[in-house]
Image (cartoon, rainbow, N blue to C red; front, side, top):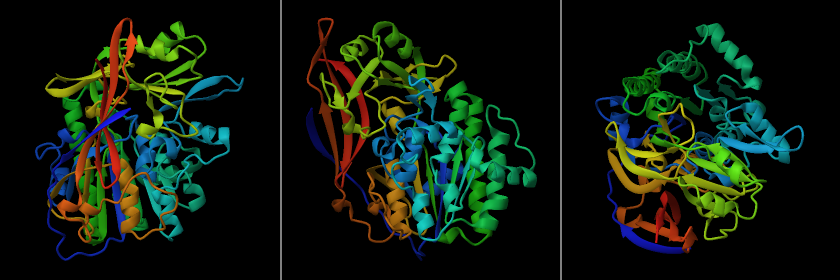
Length: 490
């Protein structure tokens, strides 16, 4: 690979007046929230939170841009290879020993993943683990898949903590308590207004006033749940954004009423962005028909390949929708998995992204290839529209009214909060402490240089035409963030 590097500027801001050190933190994950969907008209609470805190203008998800790759990135501060859960769908040996696909959205699959190699579900400490060792308490509330919530704190049982979400057998009694207090959960719909409101009520009427956890994580399934089905611009999707904003307002109001707001740091983030689907593909079928012996599993805008055979890479390159390819050793002019943090004991042999464009659909830029015929929007690719996520921080430990163009991302949340809460660091992080966003001890703008870099493969030939794959990064303070990738003719 070859690399090119060039500098980018950075601005600064003032500190937080009358600072009080935070005693607790609330993290709210708006699943699938693109930063360009935040506005004073539709999301006024989040908009105002950003104005009174720090808005990270260049925040990034990890690749692959999938929920169950980014949930561990948020909870552990590690990229998927080190965290141990590479994506939404993985291959594991079935009852007959043959590889079979399993969804990591299922808590039983996550346990099966752990049982397969005798290691914990996550291979690194979570923020909740660190809070527990310091004598604090964590509560995770999830209105999305069981996996997205459970990956925030898979050791909750042994720590005596709570994870309130459907589909987690070991926590069924906790959900029963919620039902006894608040009645049965409403049915899911598009948008999931009543569903997400029910979980918000659990937080504001039970968790915060009665338990007041050191760490509260709320995984809010919309807008992702609704925009998947109906698209970015559908009225129902706009309503799902308004719902999430209203629920954020209710939680902030709860902390205010209890006199806790000034000692609580609030983080709002999203696990990934999303792209409109303008082309359909079935890579598992295509590879099965052309590449006997390997097993391919579809992961939104990317595909994982297990048991790769000689010629598999050449077969993938003949798919007109295939983008950059990653392998363990970077063979055959691919990129190494380590370059994007996907190297690890549980990663597949090959990962490849689908192609994307900046084409606008219903006025929203960003289009890509997708695999599910029922989805209007999906994610998982190397598109900047999938990689860019929302990140806002507000509270006594953060600067006021600062929009920082320094790159940041989901991997930085756990190390930053570990630092602010004074916790034992435990296992190493891939992310960094976001010092430039802190009210005290933050570096000056000149101390936080930002660089853009690229990595380009050697040319390769497909059917007589030469191609190269390109990856783009942004760097600061010794840390690099993947910002996009594509395949282009030479």
